[in-house]
Length: 467
Ligand code: SF4
Image (cartoon, rainbow, N blue to C red; front, side):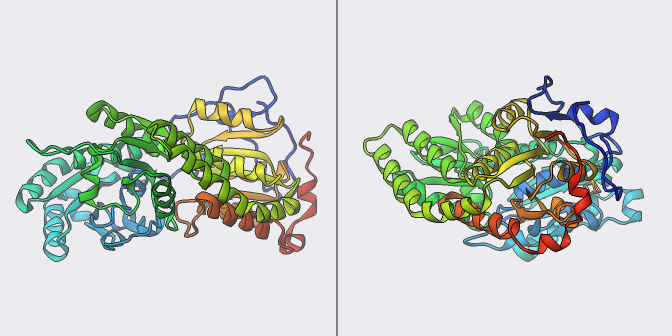
């Protein structure tokens, strides 16, 4: 085990479980490979959500579709709020439908109830598509949701698409992304004889329009001369998604949820893809440059450079101000996907903040190698962490500010650590140049708040960690 340091008084921290030791790496030491992309360890209380939740966060932003959760009503508590995507049109996706299975359905089967629910949703709301999510109990009792959806689709003449996302089929949320990918491909596959014409427009995969981020990126693209076909799935509609095969290029932002979709689109429609990242000024600039290079159209590179120059100059004074205040602070990052972790590392470094602990729920080996190369020696990298590990490293690494999601917020706050939300349930736009300023401002206000001077329990911060 490469983690050193004692357990502080007060009992807030525990050592890693033996089986988890290969999922933790300290930079600068001999071990560089991390155990990742695997099921969570039973009993370790992973921070990951379940497979069904993984599928739901990918598909729920389709604004005019109905999302029907086939299972006990508790699973449907994952609602629009877990992916606060904004819509420019329909608000259908903000409803949460459930078949609300009870004991009788578990014993005798829930297929009739499912068919009746689909019929009622179609009769009352007329959605162009219904996604039916399988939950744990449905997988266990063996309801044939594929047949029920096919029959409902024939009955109503719309897409009724099963999402095979029973929570227990894997201990890795990424399997839920995979289930969503198959449902998406099912939705967008042209009907027999239907031809989707190729265009010069881009598809933006893995952009969920949190705080209007899709709209911001769309404005940047338009300014350099690129039109967006559809974002997948932020502020999308069923009709718009069906035009995906006509895209000229797939821009992949959230790689964890969308690399698999991009691969399927390349195989089926020959559409190439490129990874982009619109979080932070540096990433935004590099993404615009990469898109301009791929289009290779006269004037596009110049337009991209003009935009980058103008926006960088505009935000620079404010970023410089926050950097002066934040220089030397110590940060922890724990987020779902590696693309976001890499973006936050860059942004925090631009603000003069040291990243001493970084982890993700679904990172792959190559992602962790990149993270490893960006952190100073002595920093801790963790795959699929649990609350005990996060608490331990927040204390051992004497963290001032943590960037993460809703489940990490409480861990940071109860230890007196500032917290900045970078999750899919946030409401702030953090993309692009304005988003970079918003992020810096949030880090500053949270990190430098005088409240921490009163709340921090000094003995916990004197733990020797060898740094
Ligand atoms: S019961 Fe299963 S599908 Fe429902 S929320 Fe829990 S783990 Fe997910």
